[in-house]
Image 1 (spheres, chains in turn yellow, orange):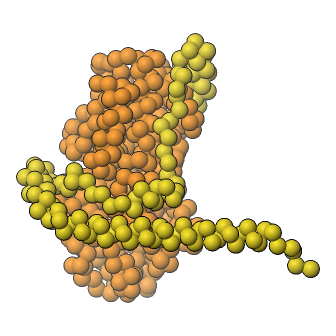
Image 2 (cartoon, each protein chain N blue to C red):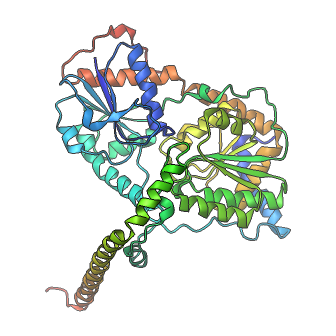
Image 3 (cartoon, each protein chain N blue to C red):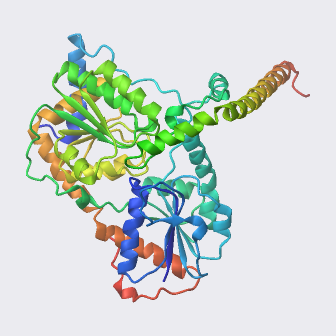
Length: 118
Length: 365
């Protein structure tokens, strides 16, 4: 019997032994990117709602879901205009952000090149 | 005494809503009044929780603020003269949610922003785990109480304590919201390795409501790619059905990277199920020494642990026995005593006295 406290060590040894026999060639966890990068911000700037997210959480909510989706479709033109305005704002803010980043980088470069005060 | 409970959101499958309703039963049995309110109410609560806008509190009434996400109209609530008890359930860090559910991420980001204000305004600061309480202390809470989540395991049916093994091929189970921080993707990958190298007939069951339909589809696609036909993803189960899933499983595998408490660990102990888990957040505290805790990022180690937990009868028995013991630390009586002490401390913090005999109060363990 393995004591719970010994289990991880035993599993590590077993995994290593199995690897020597050619098993577990790809055993890394799926990558998860949680940092908010500029590239991700750009991707998010474009507002693209998914109609599948419109649903009812009630039990037997299928007819409610269908009604909600119909309403969204009927209002599609209006929502498209809203999305366009929001996307315009998002992209403009990102542009401003990028410009500010460039200015900060430039200032930092200049600061690095300056002589220290006497 | 009146105690009004205020929740960020309420839903029929939500652990905090369930706990608030259980708290209400205790309050009634102690002769206390009050009502339960939430900012957002999902259909299915059957009128047991009413909107925050309908809060009518007398100045001496205690407000019990359950904090797990953004609380609507927080400033107005904190400006009320009532004694306030903060019960912090932790807030999922928004970075896990931005990609899949931006609205939920916003609620969580604001919920974290609101926490210092809540800590400052609360007469008594409490949390459902020592891990969560440490976050409150880091924000300046002088003294914190721990009131563990009140879990009604009986609703799932009686547990298995006779050491009976589940029939059929090895079945691995995880129960929890389908959400990026719960790492069901890593569970699927670890399971696929176990299946490929140790148990070709093995099955994986994931139970939980999806954060979004898109994320559920992502997990289904991953399962189809790595272990076609061997993974079942279920949601909206009744308590009886959930109990059946625990009974039919051989191992509970939790690779979640953020947990403020983790109720399913206790549910697994209730059913005598060996637990393998990442020691993230409050997991190590909730599990005690009754689970195998693994930090290794190498999923081959996790797969081998699953194999060990399925095949080593002595190990299973030992974990089952420790799980039963750990469950005792979270008995309803102990939690209720802590809750009552925290509410009464809040009520008396402004000089008002609870209208109960103090000798009634159970001693804290």
